[in-house]
Length: 515
Image (cartoon, rainbow, N blue to C red; front, side, top):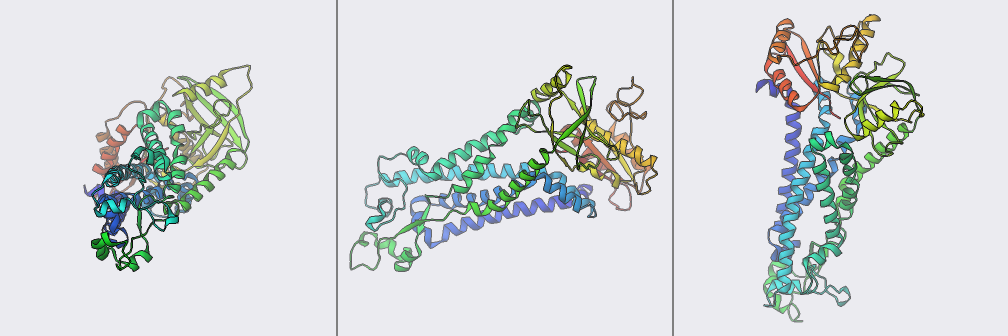
């Protein structure tokens, strides 16, 4: 537990602040709507569900402001570059961008559920109060005229006794946008599961772009002001705590209390999301500009097991080890972009990727390059973008673990190390890399082209970590993984178990590739 706290204190602090802000915003808004004089009459109809709906709406605005920031990949790559001299702990937080993106999404789902349930109760109470004919305060408030020309202002959005909740939902801006946002959110969340992303990436890709409808709907959701409060002028003329007792005399000229007037709250969601949306649009414009630059394919190699290697050139392209790019093939799909780790070294005069058949898009791409008498398909490239593997040379000892095609990020690292040793690079901190054999029937490694081949098989991790800790008792060891989540859990536990509480002794830092 002690090692876990040492290695993750910043993440824990960051998540604690984020969760704390969610709790604070919810409680603060709840108390505001439960006590504000402006909503005294509204609470007479709706009760505490008014405060629940408004508090969850505020938290939705807050988290919707954050949801786009972790997927601004150019921004993250820039921050990673500017943080190159920052502590290792601060740089590692950028590797958790997709984890934070998912956590924010889950929080949005939670507050969406609270918001919808609260409004279901609200509309039920609006409907029942509109049906009431007992002359109570609730029935009087619900019968206030919707016709502004008659000097009144309404509180209940259900105008007539025979008007249904469904009619109000699908004919009001708030109701219609709420339905659209909910459907978009459900589709995005369900299609983002691990199984869908791995097996049907195209489904995930297209449905995730429904976020556009979610953001647009959120921006205009508050227009129309279904939840209304008493105007300041009306409160000054007659305080609701006093005048509520004399509601039967509101129309008497001798009574000091006048019929209250109400107004909708101005929409506020757009204020929360405006800056992140502008930032995201700038990000997309930049990435579109980069993707339109011409890519020249210099070499195509078909490896065994249906693995395609593409070597390319692009003007102004500059990379670091372990980075990845997004690739698009317009002849297959003009909208789909898929991430691939760069397998070339920065020292080489080209950049390359290895593509394994793992779905419809990759299979179609490989098939297109296999056709001998057809022109080479045009490829568009966006990137490169930074990953945890960029920090590999900051460690004295590096352990590289790749499962299946997950060995590709380390091809770039191993080749770069070879080039650095050839050039006698004295700035290289790394003194030891873990190794093994992949495709041992070949003279050289299939990915790196080096005689020292990558290890094949599943090691006994406790033995491996124990040996490393014994051999390097005072070193900082970087453990890098590109592979499944189950393997990540095992390696993460080993890193915590074998790291010393004494910062002067061996420390294991776990790093995982995330796309």
